[in-house]
Length: 548
Image (cartoon, rainbow, N blue to C red; front, side, top):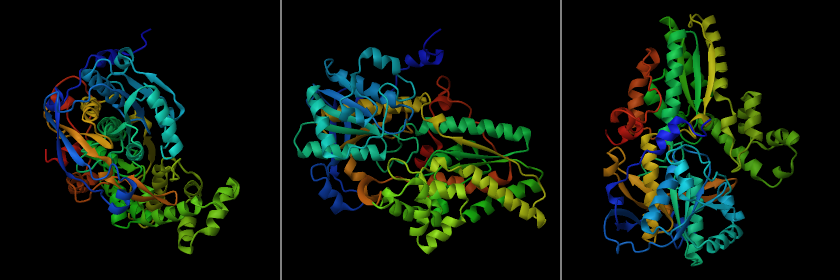
């Protein structure tokens, strides 16, 4: 039996497209000095060697414009998987080989920990060719080790020198690229001669700004989830007896939920940022859904779909305030000495009166998860909170009360889904295959021009790939201070759904009709061959943001 599928064989032959500027030697055009998005004095003091650098745009140039061509490179995959990571690495590989065929690429295994622990492999043409245009991060694996301590940096430089590595590429999200910036600053301060470049990865879509139009993997993940949602909508419209509550990934922002709504037109989509802006309570959300269910039932439609962002519960103001209070309590030294079986009582005894009232109003399972379960960064593990079941249960109770009052005449039966891992390692769409390959290839040009502390960026992405614009943006430009595990730390600011932005405005203008009528769209599976309008389209979010 073949060890690879027929799709993998066919996709291996696909040659990703590059922006015109990257097809030969490049020249770096530098803009004005930059500032961080917040806490400028503090960020400048923390990053004196990499702060204020200019944005860089690449244009066609000559070999003398970026003369550094001979160097070995290390690459790290950091954090959660996202479709296209293998293409970033293959683009990087091809990029450094195009500068000098003797250049070597080393992959550090299982994330940043591989750098610290000196675990690596040399990525050869045979290995690279096996992974071109495939999903996943399995070429070298990923991990969530944070690069924050001096001893980690010093252990890293030992292996970098041993392998003759002059540049390191960290492929990750906001936390991973914050680590890249910290590492770039440390090596620059020590004059170690190692460049550090970041690449923007996260399916959540919250690593974007005026320079970064999209984080890679968002396109593929949303198309994967939208296919599944469309399939559920078709089933829903066929059986006509269930309300489907569908939770999708997106802990800190609702970009995935919004994009999937734009692609599938469900009856209801909740946007966490709107919930927070309108100071809605859990009861407000439940009431909104129940009224929509009742309105459809009055027309004989006892079915529908609801899309819920993973992080919704953290955006409900009263619960968000409670979580912040819990984070402070649990970050204290005393809390670390409390046994798990006594932690719930410890939390209750240390909450304010307001916080305790909110805490005790929650279902026991949700309260327990808020108080006890934390991820490695000290954050609530919202993916473990079954928000879809919580909401459907509360909606059911609300509808029962409405039926007793004569305000609900139908039936209500719920089904539940959570789409998360299904989208993280899908084979990249044509857009992500091209975009990621360009990001990696572009990183090689940033190295050639001697840049460090930069993130590889590709812009104008709703145009054909040859018209894309390549360059780099200083990572410090995106940073501010935020409270993490009880302490203020420099981090890249997350991009939330903008309620005055074109994607949300379009959704807002259509959602009332979608709620009342059955307007489902069925986008189907990702297509790799066929008409460009089917295979090469970008997300609805990008199209609306760029007025396309």
